[in-house]
Image (cartoon, rainbow, N blue to C red):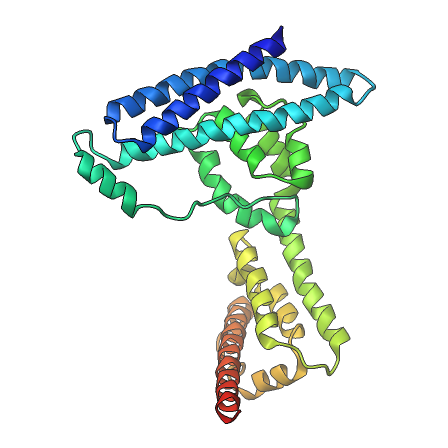
Length: 318
């Protein structure tokens, strides 16, 4: 009985979605487009009600039964459910863009012109798999969705599931996909992969890894640009987490210095900038770290200019 209701609700939603898409792409009045979306919204609510009841039933069956049948059906059903949610969210964003970017009395000519001049590449949330180093890029974009009070928890749950893969996706999908479970699912995700002290430890270990690589490398020549980019990435990530240079320079400076090749360290000692730093205590160490990073930036830029000059010279003589 429930499966038949789902089948009927899906057909009704698909028809409403196709009608909305057709209206949105046509030159029909603005009011008709809004009405088409409102009808689609009604069909989405009906479909969501049936889906939620069926999903919860399958979820509990998969936990109670020893067999994998219900679990496989549950996962397959969630994937199909995501397709309809994605279509609805796409329609919702399109109608929101139309209603907020266009005055109610705007002419059809202006509407057509705006449509033609605002076709930017589609922005997608970065996929988060559970890798600690990917948390900050993921959170920097998903935070806007999480903090937006105008987005319902049901929609936030769908956005969250679509942005996750691998281990992270498995964790969130262990919760029934309802609005009531969004906060629980998100906090579980953050506690597992996004706690500040875990991410701080990760980037400190990255710096320690650079030190170890430098020790194992010996006299082998390495790319200063590559080392600088990795150091800069770790320092900026730590600053984002509150581990700033003015607080932790005593820890960061020796790590950065020990990650550098011998010839770069010698150039740093000869530069005179190290001795030119005044002050004492924590402030002196902070200034020294800032000067070292600036020195490395200049060295990398000089190296790029030299490579460009040599490459250009070789090309002209060939």
